[in-house]
Length: 387
Ligand code: SAH
Image (cartoon, rainbow, N blue to C red; front, top):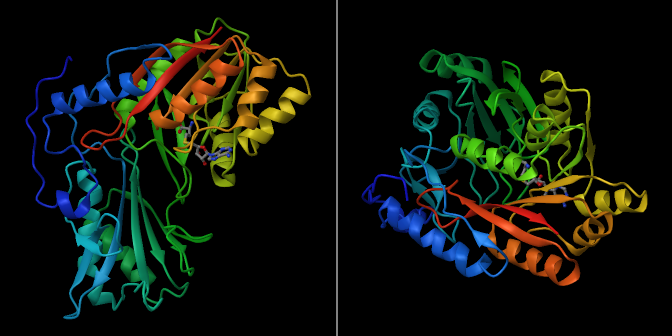
């Protein structure tokens, strides 16, 4: 490993929070463990390259979320849910989270009483503020504050916005998201922009991206550049290829591929907000050879296969649950020269590779783990697949 051996920084809340499963190991030990896990799960499919770790594996998260709770004495606590429960563990700062985001959350919590803003109680369904979400563009320093409220009426909103902006003039947009439902989902369907544009932008691999409150965006931008760099390297674009970017989110991989020589890019994504962002992003990067569709990736692939599309390269970046047979069968039918599979879950990657290799001549040629989530047990891999 190339990293200096950073000793474990033991977090006093580790047991209660449960987010950093590997925090009792030094960073080098974490990387060794992840490498061994990747080899155990994926080694039978192809060569597992050495995991690429972070130079500075702290405060890497560009998106921070907090839940709120008011105790019997009226004291307001902000933090995360205790692992496996809905009890809020008070946290003011965290070794994985962006420092400014953590400071903004504490400041909002301290402002609540003076604005008579109550916190939402999950048991009764009463109360106002449910969650806060802060997203920061590390390259642009644009900051979005999202206040998730149980009810739409926000009587003191103008003064509240003024008060928080006075403390953090670097906040570029503030959004109220309304979530009246009894649900585990943080964000609801309706939102109002209280200040600024309602989105932030960030720059990755030289391309500019718009990020809305509800769109997926990789949470570790430093390692995302490494991950995408590998994905583009594996695609080995020569120019004029037709490229599919499936599970494309806000279009990041497809847009970077288009900038790196792809002739024609088609993206597919289920989340409508992300697709809207992807379309704007393509325009902002002066790309005309790229289109995005709001669709289930499996459905999209089946239609493309039925229409006898012949893509040269297919990027796929599914959520933790992995891909599905509809997708993989259509992929085999279309038979692209190259498949680049970006995975945040080596178990579902192994399942999908097993299906692909048993049902087609495709083989995983290289598997590159990239440490996107230091101190947690999560393992991200990018995999080069061809026949
Ligand atoms: N490639 C993007 C997003 C990866 S995360 C990036 O690197 O930023 C996975 C994405 O898949 C999310 O945006 C999620 O909304 C989307 N998704 C989840 N299930 C899907 C499905 N069945 N079909 C299409 N997209 C899906």
